Amino acid sequence: MDHFVYREGVLSAESVFLEEIAARFGTPCYVYSRATLERHWRAFDEALGEHPHLICYAVKANGNLAVLNLLARLGSGFDIVSVGELERVLRAGGDPARVVFSGIGKQAHEMRRALEVGIRCFNVESAPELERLNDVAGALGLRAPVSLRVNPDVDAGTHPYIATGLKENKFGIDIESAPAVYRRAAALPHLDVVGVDCHIGSQLTRLAPFQDALDRVLALVEALQAEGMVIRHLDLGGGLGIRYREETPPSPAEYAAALKARIGDRPLEILLEPGRAIVGNAGVLLTRVEYLKTTAHKRFAIVDAAMNDLLRPSLYQGWHEIVPVRPRTGETSLYDVVGPVCETGDFLGKERALDLAEGDILAVRSAGAYGFSMSSNYNARPRPPEVMVDGPQAYQVRARESLDQLMAGETCLPDDGA
Ligand SMILES: Cc1ncc(COP(=O)(O)O)c(C=O)c1O
Ligand SMILES: N[C@@H](CCCC[NH3+])C(=O)O
Image (tube, rainbow, N blue to C red):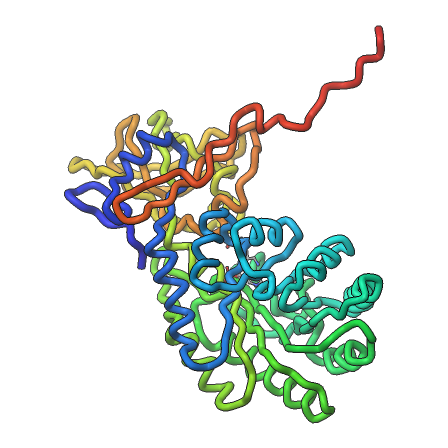
């Protein structure tokens, strides 16, 4: 559910018309709803209720500073995968003691910074990473809190590029080898074992894979506890899906109830790392129709947003609803909605029934997650601005990149004196 609704026939975010935002800030432009972001974060927090828990929002889904700041104000934790994401969280006022650090390729300098600021936990993804973290912590005279990210080998039933919990995937430590790696972790002098972590994939629309993964992880926790290891928290990752088209994913309440039912009264704090379910339907991408082009075979709506702004359709055949901000009342035709980038794979949607004229503003929905955060400068296109709607107000929280910014730090060849 999102806050983008038709009011007086025109698409509105809360009480601000999106066509006004397009006129004020230009297109393409990302627009986020503060109320929706807050509601979605609270839905997770309230669903876990009295059970000790921490919601660690996955920064990769949308790392805009204003988004991070508003979640930090709600008391959110954060799941990061790089020192860049850590710096963004700190800049946005996030509490380092509520940060968990995931990712298979953590570099020593990233570990050092995370240890210095005192993050909550490292989600370690391999045996060699464990050794490196122990060395880095030792050199600083600190102890690193660790969970091992285990790979439970369950089929998440999602797109193969975003399934992460199968044994052939590069993520985590396979669950059979985990006890031996935990023993090693417990023996290393500069590590503190504090939890178990897993994340099986993204855009999951059924509960069963989460439940299967949890059963396997709970069996591991029992085995570790039987050896005398103290496991304080269970980090179950992110991955809860959203509705893009006809999906009917479980709600955060249903998801949390299923997890709590299995965990029962075990004294384990629950950490979750939702990204998409918090921001996905809290954002739209506004774009303007530049040209309507008709060939012998097709109608194309050529818009000013492209795959560099929103990669999901090109990369995963991701489907996003595309709607006119001010709908017309005439006949619709089938359009491929495409961007100006020089790739056949540059499209936002195919064969969409739309009644369009040049200059119309379209909203690409469910674009709050993995939209701006996966954008690039391909074709030397500046990245779009981001706007937050907050009640009756809309304000820019990131300006459109300038061409100068786009070339910042680059030089031509050194002068050879010729
Ligand atoms: C380790 C980890 N945690 C959390 C997430 C967030 O996932 P989602 O946006 O699907 O909730 C991801 C991405 O899939 C991830 O790799
Ligand atoms: N970028 C992906 C999700 C990646 C999940 C990252 N672990 C998407 O848009 O669906």
